[in-house]
Amino acid sequence: MTEQIFTDNLLAGRVALVTGGGTGITGGVARALAEAGARVALVSRKREHLEPAAERIRAGGGAALAFAADVRAYEEVERAVAATVEQFGRLDIVVNGAAGNFLCRAEELSPNGFGTVVDIDLKGTFNVCRAAFDELKKRGGAVLNISATLQLLGTPMQAHAAAAKAGVDSLTRTLAVEWGGYGIRVNAVAPGPIEDTEGMKRLLPPALKDKLRHRIPLRRMGRIRDIEHAALFLCSDAASFISGAILVVDGGHWLAASRLVGPEG
Image (cartoon, rainbow, N blue to C red; front, side, top):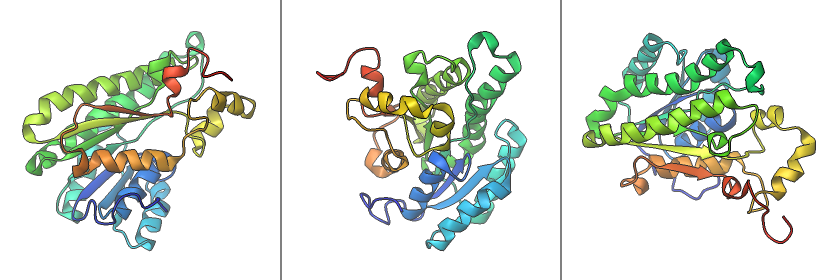
């Protein structure tokens, strides 16, 4: 359960659509939004992957639905948005968390592999934002894109994901400018090393965890709850004058990554 830093009714009456799996960061964000009072629609390619997450939200007293849609297919995204509005009556918050990634050196990366990640992360983010636009502008909604810090570091073996997330950052800023007149806020949260995710388990060899932790100024890796708290803030009225921001949540890692940290670095 999300640590109670925010009030239970912070997002009462609002409806959020969250893309991505029902576990990991997006699953945590969806659960946190529900605990803050929002009704939540979970969207991913396979509904059966989302149903357990939706059921956990409902078991905790929240309202949640699951819809199958591939964010790369605009027509499917349109249907998911329409189904959300049909079931919940409105749409106020969109969280773009659908993503793909794997480790691969650029010289070994196929054009198809590069394109697939860009299609999911960047094209998928645009598709969802565009499909939700007409609903979001009715009341002045909030978009939160899940970015990363890979593109800030020149991260080896992540040319595809870093390029896609750099595009997400750029899209975030552009939409914030273009859609601000409709009262739509568009921000992004950029997680650094988050240790309790499946991606971190897959992408970071255990032998490197302690070394990475030592290079983070706060001397710990992040937890999903850290991203949940950032997401709740950016989606709430507490951030009503914040738009176009890329909030890095990494304990200062990317700032210190190219140099020694402190006397023990």
